Amino acid sequence: MNAVADAPRATRISGLTYDTKLLFCVLFLVGVGIVMVFSSSSALALKHYDTSYYFLKRQTLFSLLGICALVICSHLPYRLYRLLAYPILLGAIGALLMVQFSSLGVTAGGARRWLDLGFLRFQPSELARMALVIYLAYSLSKKQANIRRLSVGFLPHVVVLGIFTALLLAQPDFGSVVIFTTITWILMFVGGVPLRWLLGFLLPLLPLGYYYMMSAPYRVRRLLSFLDPWQYPADAGYQTIHSLMAFGSGGVVGTGIGKGVQKLFYLPESHTDFIFSVIGEELGLVGVWIIIALYTVLFWRGVRIARGCDDLFGALLAMGITTAIGLQVVINMGVTLGLLPTKGLTLPFLSYGGTSLLLNMGAIGILMNIGMARHRGGGDRVHRG
Image 1 (tube, rainbow, N blue to C red):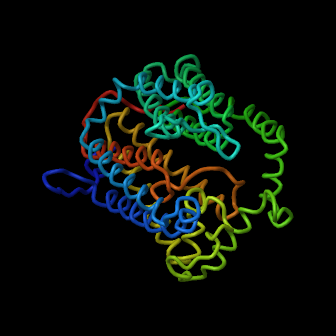
Image 2: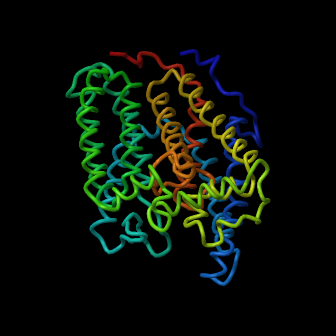
């Protein structure tokens, strides 16, 4: 890896060094998110909270806290997470257990995914995703000497993934299971785990995934509605139909901010899971392409940072962060465009939600720190097999 060629261009703001392109993309997305959360939630907020500014105020506060998290994490040495890998992992598993087995767990929309601490409600699966990335980066980099052995390079990481999978399926949250599994397989591949193990153990998972999808009537309806949503206009296909109607109404330049119709109690979760549909309606194809371009630059910077880091732990951590955010973006956009079955996943930096925004912006701060460190480590090499 050529750390000099791949080192991100940076600028100094008040004595602090930042990756300019990455910072611009994230802040622009957060700014658009504040505007679109207000546009998509004002009617809902007025109905339930007697003020149209309820979600706007909270999203603005989350954004300010997220910026603080980004700044703090960008100046904490990323190697610190080597020492914290297991405590963070155990903390995430503990939080997921509390969701299911304590009175603090909150059920909403048929899923038990949140913890209510009184002063704060958060979604532990967001923390668990970051914990998995840190653990995999640490474990894979530490075990390089024996990474090709099944009992060292593959099985321990699959066991940890299995623990997360069991806890996530209990919620249920199949979308997060897909993301966690994909992250694990990608990082094991980048970390040098032989392809024969990755492919050999992936194939048996496919029939298990099929059985899980077919084992519950609501999942079967969701799959059938994905194939032909117009056959289920008042049931499983309702969200997809109104999401597509939003994109169709937007045309090239959109109806204008605040002038969309689908958010007016037609499209459920318009300020969270389906905010991209509101963007398509109010900002049109032009707005959609701008958002996609910003995410593309963000992913490109993440991959460049990973390639430019000579420390394997830093490279895997950067790749894991980029992959985790990228998968969430692809799945959310795929759902809103009717290209994937409906899943309850937010759009990073744009959707309403404090947990997602804080952790994703903190992750971007870690990514920036890796890029600025320009570590010249030796001996951590990626092996292919």
